[in-house]
Amino acid sequence: MMHIPAGPFWMGCRDGFDTDELTGPCADSELPSREVIVSAFWIDKHEVTKGAYRQCIEAGSCEPTPHWDAEWYQGEEGSGYFVPGLDDMPAASATWSQASTYCAWLGKRLPTEAEWEKAARGTDGRKYPWGMQEPTCDHANYKPWDINTMTPGPECWYREMYQTLTPVGMFCALGVSPYGLCDTSGNTSEWVADGYESQGLGYEGLPALDPVREPTGNLVVRRGSNWGSWDFASGGYTLRACRRLGAPKNSVNATLEAGFRCAKSD
Image (tube, rainbow, N blue to C red):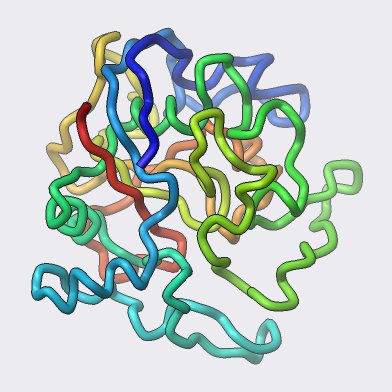
């Protein structure tokens, strides 16, 4: 686990920093941007792997994820098939409740949104975990988009071996966050502790100190992007560190886009 010190950082989407004339304004769900203070905590360097999650199943404390035996796409696109993922790949398709159970089994918990974002982007207001440089195939597991022609770009080099998920930590060299976290952009989006009330609500009404929106309904938050995300899309840059989406807590239809990492208080 990596230690994140207490202190302030800029959370949320900032027009002109996280956006430009191509991406348009910030999404309502990522507003308002403001400085918040987060207490010190610890967070996993890597997404929880299938091998690690298997230990929880064998201990009788966790249930297999909805797509436990069909997590990884193999073969030619359009004619391939899904097979069990490798143990060094993320524990993909876990539900929010399953992720919470696994973290509790280790004496940990899911990170809050504020904790996740600070760990992913640091304190200097960067757009991506690695900085302001636009992503390349060496930064993250994603799908490139040619913004000049507004068409999909060429597939990244790793697609020859991995059609969907990639092993955790594969992009640490260039894609690492300021606090040493890997894969906070790409591979899988990640469950956090917060509820997701509505797209328009965003962070309204939350305190500046250790903000967290307790989940009161069925929707909770996933942070970051996944292996199927284009770097540029109609909703803006999907690999940026302020990216957030709502998803049902326990949908058995969860795709291979859902992973997680655990945290604990200092």
